[in-house]
Amino acid sequence: MKFSSLVQRISGEGADAWNTHARARAARERGESVILLSVGDPDLDSPLEVVDRAIECLRAGDTHYTPATGRVPLRDAIAAQHRRRCGQEVDRDNVAFLAGAQNALFATSLCIAGPGDEVLALEPLYPTYPAALEVSGARMIRVPARADFRVDLAALEALITPRTRAIFFATPNNPSGVIMTEADIAALGQLARRHSLWVVVDEVYAGLAPQGHVPSLAATLPDQVVTISSLSKSHSMPGWRAGWMVGPKALITHVEALSLCMLYGLPGFIQEAAVTALGVAPAAEARMREYCATRCAVLLAGLDGIPGLRCFVPDAGMFMLVDVRETGLSGHDFMIELYASEGVSVIDGGAFGADTRGFVRVCFATDEPVLREACARIRRFVASLRTSSSLRTPSSASAAS
Ligand SMILES: Cc1ncc(COP(=O)(O)O)c(C=O)c1O
Image (cartoon, rainbow, N blue to C red; front, side, top):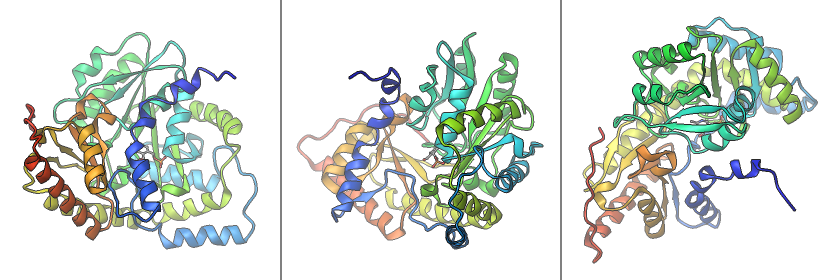
């Protein structure tokens, strides 16, 4: 039997990047002593009041169909948070509640581009982007970053063609943790305005940025900016699949039609719990920021002085890029060999684009003792490389601060 051309567009690099992670997860389920630092799924519980609210709603029978873009009180709460965070005057008609930021990215892609169009994605980029951005039939063009993983505006401008429809990026970025500066975002906005491009900003980690805020273009370019976010990272609620987009009303109308044929609404008890979550957002986000800051420090201290490793300190988020080139291994081989010898899973930086080849991404959103043990295992692994007969020749690694 034949399958559609779409199945090829969605089965690329994004899927491959997670093989070691999938093996590690299966090993953990079998009770093996593996440590997963390969996924941004914090080992913190969801806020208790949010869990209580969901249970209360379930018990009260909130198990029926709901509106395609979400219930009004929830969309009002999302609009209010967006107004506070981005300074853009929006209301419920600018908001669609969807099944996580991933679903919002997917829905946005389908509504703003199609075959023959190009969409620009700033590297380094989250490995689900290629499939999510090309699902519409548009071609995703990667925009290389500068050596410090910040946006290369000249490279971005050079890649704009008459076919370009949109610029996609995440701030804070996954995997680099870089927050786009006011100056960079303003310059990017000028390009978008000049060329009439959509700007799709993935802000899932914004709640983890200092004061829960990142520079935003939304108020400056309200007809062109789509802001995507969720409760997954800010509240440690990834399994709830609670995310949204905020954008121009005309876009939300199209997303509503798409959502109607794709989801037909999302669970009411989750939406009610999401309202509670947004109500406690300042405390929930502060909890996550504190959690991430402490663990980032533990990871930095644990990797300090390991010969051949250089840490790139993130502005925010739950990931750290570690340059492994001086060990003589590629990011891919480091990932494979570290897991094989020590049972610690990380992700090859190459999965996020060419700029992060030679790095691995380490998620530090885990228990401190586990993180310390992981660092000890990584130290032992790197030492074993140095003493092994196949002593590697260091490659020409460039510095990443
Ligand atoms: C940059 C980025 N965007 C989107 C997502 C997906 O978020 P959600 O769980 O809200 O779908 C992730 C998850 O790790 C991410 O890192």
